[in-house]
Length: 72
Image (cartoon, rainbow, N blue to C red; front, side, top):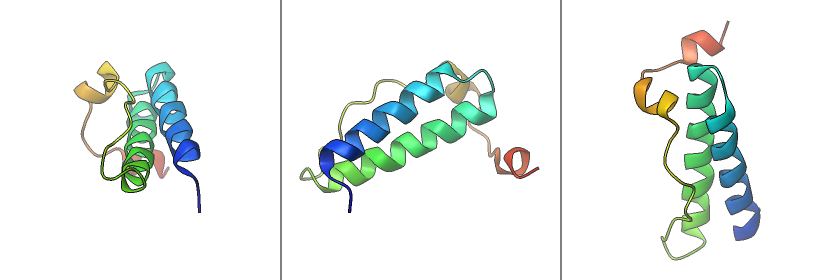
């Protein structure tokens, strides 16, 4: 089981990768991973999620499902 700090670090790293990604599909997937790690960390912290910043603009603009693009 991962520690709270590890989950926060993973969430922050995925959020940063989402912001740096040039592909909207990749940015979206990284952001989803960041949210998953954030949720797991919140469960270990009395429900309070750690701050990971705002989603990248590519994610805001491209919220549709990209699983079909990444599966190819």
